[in-house]
Length: 114
Image 1 (spheres, rainbow, N blue to C red):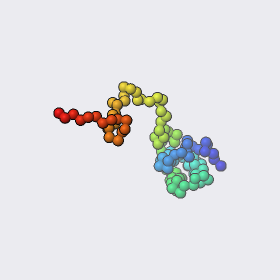
Image 2: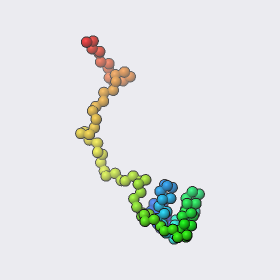
Image 3: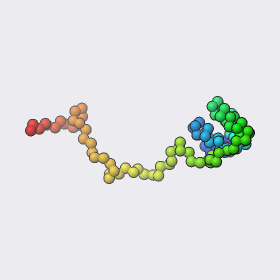
Image 4: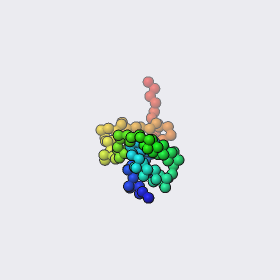
């Protein structure tokens, strides 16, 4: 049985189905068979298994893997933060004075009659 760490698609278990269906197009028949076996013995999602079987049939009929990289960056995962907050005193907005009604700590200001 294939282990998750041995799969040709890194972080397979965390890929959204849409990304997974795109990434299987980069695999050759042997790699796809390996991923299909893993899928069937674990999540066994009907949509994923059907797509893999369809793609496997296409590969066996002469289709070629796409030129993409199955280990490419995953846009569905946010990049790690560079550290620190870009907010500072210089970038913060003006102080906000809440309206006096409903705030007992802010007494009403007299109205000017002018």
